Length: 228
View 1 (tube, helix red, strand yellow):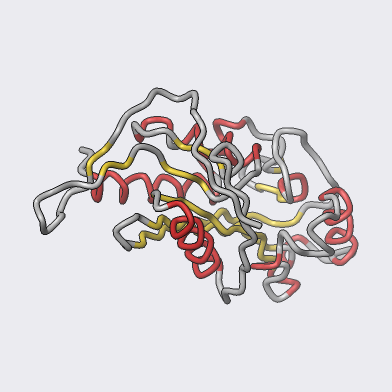
View 2 (cartoon, rainbow, N blue to C red):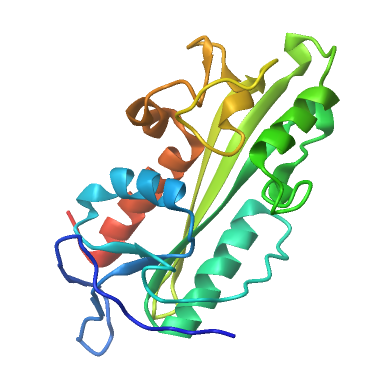
């Protein structure tokens, strides 16, 4: 069952006009829905897109419940599927992401199945422990890995924007850190000597795959919406 209902938001209200309408009119973008209910992810998103000048709400805050089948073959395809699905339901501008962990020793796994690895309801402590066990005895030089994030934006007029970001590192030897979520506690950043769950949120946003993809999307949105 799918429900859709607009709800108030706490960020300062502002509307942006899209440029380039052939009929001489502009679409008003009153807010952007981000196709997630993950509050940890929304916290990162709001920090990075704070200066976009438009409220960003989660699906839950927008009152939207939707079953989205992510059957794409890449992070970008899945992000576009999510953004287009919610845009068609609401008629509003929608951002969506698909991200995951690629471990070279495991031939890129868990990859696009990162969230579904061992089942979506399985805790990340269990998932992280399982991955560490799979790499038991594997030396540093073969533990290379990266986080990948694709961001897609579906605009009401049918335009689709995409942006990709990556963060390189390797898989550590233990679960460490409290600042991150997901696979952060086992993702080791050699240049900082710690996992991505041990760095500050501000530094993580600077370095992370999602931060890079969001900053790329921010510039594309400014161009399309007429922001300088």
